[in-house]
Image (cartoon, rainbow, N blue to C red):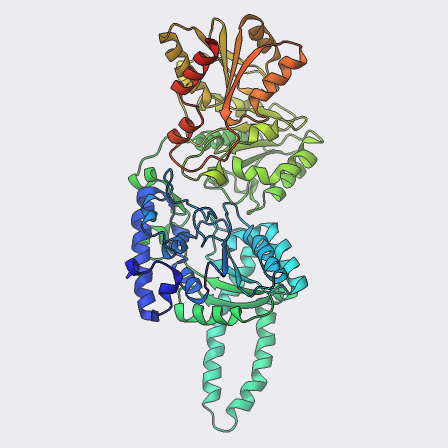
Length: 614
């Protein structure tokens, strides 16, 4: 049946039974494809019936459906003419793992980060009203998104003006890991109300069957029951924001979903529909371990794992915490991804999950540091961007000892443009008092974390997901001192200053250049800020060409910092800055992205040779 569905219009003539069969086919396709290609599995398995109902009731692309984050949008892609392209999910020039406006007219808004959909949808709804249109606008958000403040800013705004808008709250009790906080507790209370709702329906059926007195008694009781329900379940929270609340309803009951969506579509006010779903539904391993199957990679499916920098970093953090009771760990709904779940198991009282609220997390860490603790913040590079102002105003202004453990730095492969960690060096080095470091390998990562315990200032340690154990083949400078670099190979006329995982690329490029008859030096520039000014001045004095190499955007990055320092010293010098170009880098294998950016050993050797021979 799935092969006959190319647009949402093809759903309109199907019966509920046919759509249930279609849901089973979709789940089979999801499991087969995502285990092979990698991507978000459990979240999409839980949203199959909900997406079928949305595309059945509404008429995209005229009606706008905005998926928050987008990790539950695969089914919508399959139903909107991209079924065959789904086989190339997350490949270079293939189907994106997130909604992309440029990919299909059925994707109303490009998304990749959480808690954004309601704000975007409200903007679309207001544009519709100003232009005199009548189409529906729907935001689909997970309950994890409600741990982020943007959702409440948008709901408060929508409710104050009564702008017609539909918000689907897909409540599966999880974001990536198990949800935390008062909002999660509140939603649990409302989910439990479904039992209450079932009892209420049974009473109503019984009253209707009573002759003469049934209907009058039912009308009198209904008002009282509604008041009791609001008292017990707290529905007044959303209603108090000016948003009509419907639910909770079973997110796998197509008949009920369709009926409620049709009711909401006719509303002239903002409506929130609370839908309860099961993450990972239909695939037993994902049902039993939804966090494990939230996002899978082809390696996960094959059962193979490489060295994880996150694992290494957290193991070292645990060692620090065993010696210092002031050490705490914070994350924003990412305990598994950042590996801080290991810290949580060891020190549960010193672990804090702030939910999807990076701004709050950063300022909370600042508060901890101001009160005498040593907080460590585990966060992906792409999500740290959301705490930019808090880093400047709340952490750096008073030089508080907050250490950032920045995972997924640099190019990230199949997650693509929304998740590339290629901006952190540029914005972190702008911040007064901030120390910025990037280790070349797992051994140096450990040493930097040890160093952080002795530094009374903000410090950022950024690293890629995959670890590198090349440190055992290279000498160490003892002790590791703040702001020092290490020359790994001496050069003759040209020196490559490399940051983080680019050190290995620089070493391999040096070997290639040596085979061409050029002796190229390599420096591990592990501190982007403060820089090793003594070594930089020395190198600039004896080499004609200084090359910088980083997996960060060239604009404002490490290379810019080197250029600025040389200009400040009045040293007119030939420089070649290699890094990520001034454009968004799309999905693909990491090797493909490095090649696109000219960051492979051969490409670096070619660029250096071309400049050297000018």
